[in-house]
Image 1: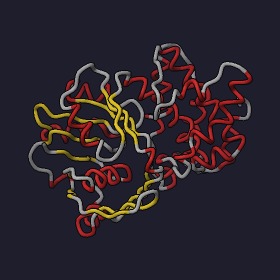
Image 2 (image 1 turned 30 degrees about the horizontal axis):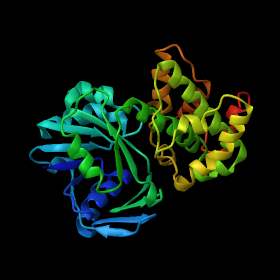
Image 3 (image 1 turned 135 degrees about the vertical axis):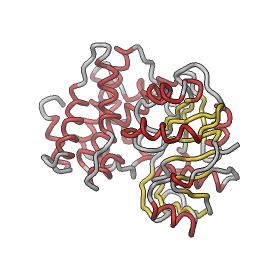
Image 4 (image 1 turned 30 degrees about the vertical axis):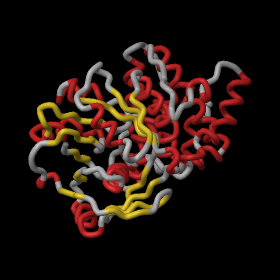
Amino acid sequence: MRAAIYGAGAMGTVLGAYITKNGGSIDLISRNREHIAALRSGGAHIVGEAEFTVPVKAYLPEEMEGEYDVIFLMTKQRHNAEILKFLSPYLAEDGVVCTTQNGLPEPLVGEIVGKERCCGCAVSWGATFLGKGSARLTTRTDALEFALGTIFGKCNRLEDVRNLLSLMGKVTVEENFVGARWSKLTINCAFSGISALTGLTFGQICDNKYARKVAQAVLKECFDMAKVCGIRPAKVQGHNVEKILGYRGPFTKWLSYMIIPLAMKKHRDIVSGMYCDLAAGRLCEIDFINGAALAYAKKKGADGPLNSIICNGVHEIERGERTISPKNLELFKNLV
């Protein structure tokens, strides 16, 4: 079996390093020439919550040859359509693309490559790209988990994908995969969205009383949108996040507010990848995170004013009309 990670940035480098270190075979592919050169010469160097270096197989896209049975798609979603068109000749007839991305990418991917050739993976850990062959794992190693599944009912090589991911962490094959996607999307909308606006880490959001209050309200809004859409959020790391972090009255609201720092304690050092893009002057994935939740809910007549504020604020940063700052929490003052 041949496997590849297309988009070996922060997350892809960490995943590829773990798979290789623990006996798997996988190609790491990236357009970043400096990063690929460093991976070839010195291996993948992982720092942070794990510290190790492992030799890996690394290639530029133009160096790809033959067909792959499994391709983990780990690029930004903005260019999924053109990337999948490029990858199509390299995907075996019974091969599968595993959308190891945030948001809800499966409908488009399945439409392009075929429903039976698409599965998805919701990842419960984070990493930061350092470049030159290095990436920082920002989640504790006891929380390296994957929710794997398909929204199409059947998928080629799902067991092969599970076996590869299990070389890094715990893999749950989730029958309610839309629910697993929505649970992860909810957390991303709250913490990644606020991190992009403010520059705060997930831990700093928890420590800032008002930022935590805003995050709590965004979580609740996403759970409410899921209900309107007929989606049942799945458990995350064995926990019913909707029951724990959602609320129905004053006491459960107070309880969820107090629990949030505990729920995020293994992920305190994560800073949103969207923040990293904004800080580097690049467009980010806000339309595929908070925007995706809004678009899905609007089809059912639901609204999400808090998620809209995050989307609009981030777009203002992209246009140079606003700077990344904790002061952007003031955008929510009339609603939270």
